[in-house]
Amino acid sequence: MTDVSNARPAVRPARPFFSSGPCAKRPGWTPEALKDALVGRSHRSKPGKAKLKGAIDRTKALLGIPEGYRCGIVPASDTGAVEMALWSLLGPRPVDLFAWESFSEDWVTDTVKQLKLKDTRVFKAPYGQLPDLTQYAPTHDAVFVWNGTTSGVKVHDGDWIPADREGLTICDATSAAFAMDLPWDKLDVVTFSWQKALGGEAAHGMLVLSPRAVARLESYTPPWPMPKIFRMTKGGKIVEGIFEGETINTPSMVAVEDYLDALSWAESVGGLNGLIKRANDNLHVLEKWAAICGWAGFLAETPAIRSNTSVCIAVIDPDFTALPDDAKQDKLKKLVSLLDKEGVALDIAGYRAAPPGLRIWCGATVERADLEALTPWLDWAWAQVKDQ
Image (tube, rainbow, N blue to C red; front, side, top):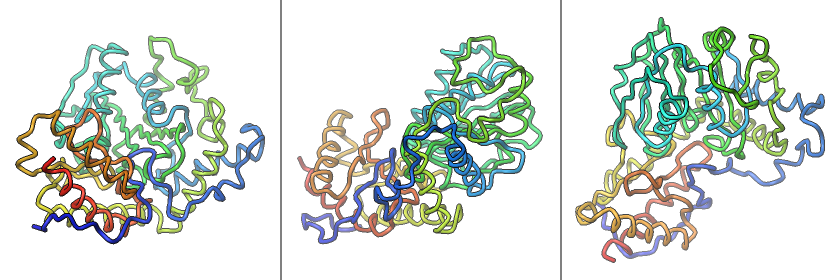
């Protein structure tokens, strides 16, 4: 156990950006990266379509998305992509929903209370744990997140999903894509956004569909009205243009340029394997620190299900754990405010619905050296507030 002292650390993180969304830009980013943005031009123009198609093709190559899967840019970030999938695909089969943090709870709400599907089963777990994924019935559709962004808990593997399943698996992978190895053969729908693991700009989502998901779209018509931005079929056939860069609504070509820059950086650090290694190395910095600091641990106590991106820190100091929740939150607000004031850690408060704690983004766009510089500041800040 380290001696948590009042000595102010000498080294500051060069980039104090540890927000879990929007996340840190790639190392070395400046606005100069946007100089080739196709501003003032239509996204329907030949160069506009080429930019959008390039973003799709390079995403598929980087993530290893299988041949025959479709990948498209859709409105409203990851949330929009998930909503498109739920409203377009659910209904013909029973649905198993797995929830263990706020966003997975949102998908339960949408399915049960908004779509009002009756034949559903909900499997929940508290923050820091996973529900029993083996309860999934392969004749059912399944809805789940791969990484719980607000709990720091990830799915460990896809072994619980049968290869010969009859239902579709719908996976919100927004803080997992580009940081974890996704088993594409087990996933029929995958969604993510640009502002998470690659540090892109917000408002655009990506939707990946397996051939089985496409077959569902072309054989099933939902009984409820479908807004324009959700419609992926016309005349009973999938609108292929969505997956070739012909977006449903107008995208920001500045954001597209920024995403293309992020993809170039990702390719330069070794592609997906390089991104995963960077995120894992970052997590290990916090694991090494937590093992000796004495006052902090992880909301996800089991290492196998611990996120390497949205790392949620729990305070384990006995004096802190004995406090009522409002007093815990007050102390953590002081801690976060102090770190912010010092300019060493920005936006690391735990999610509002999560147990009191901190949340530190460790995705690949964060430099390991900055996390190594951060940990002494965490100890210093705790020493300042723990007795207040």
